[in-house]
Length: 271
Image (cartoon, rainbow, N blue to C red; front, side, top):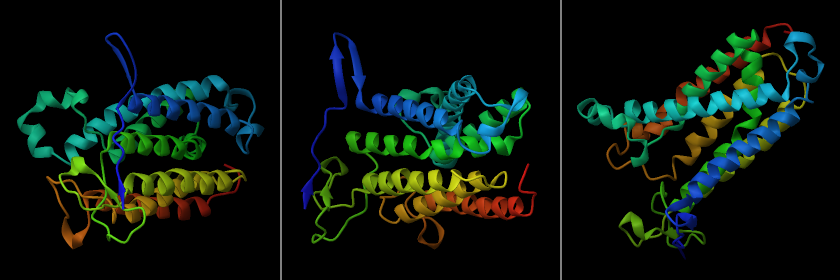
């Protein structure tokens, strides 16, 4: 049994200026996206595009900016609508109090989808081509975010067997019983493993939409599994069929990925 090592959330403080570890994980996520995005420019089918359809480093930088806006707005609105709709309907101004915490991945995903739609429209590119470009560059950012969750000592797991070698006590949970370090599970599953699988899958040219579909199926599956070890939100608990809100949100995500992949499979190999 391990004891969660209290980690000061402030990585560096100079006078009144405090740099938080969580903020650094976001910066790491953005930096990794740029690095991987620049590498994607050399992968098929993007390396073969010419003229107005050619992808450039400026495109990668622009889509990162739009994606960050989409993540922040979508993640916040998703949290308010999916997890605490009654509270925020009664306190609408607190929707803007992002410093109090509260972000939802599935809302952030919808925000990124909106950002990609805007980017595709403004650059006159197929939306699915944009989604295929972005998808393999996302999981490392998710991995960075889970490291931030662990450093903050938040989103801990459900109770584990006392015999589990890596069972961890999170004193801030209000219990001294060992729990699953679910942040690490999610880091490994929806972060590193999903990245490796998706990056290898995307190295070869696929029918347009299949890389994005693989992301939807892969993330949905890995998140669904990890949720069995993650403590459900105390204000929601488990919902119908003993599933958490995160699992219910993953079901349409996986279904959408399957439908998109099958649809893309019927399309010509060259889009």
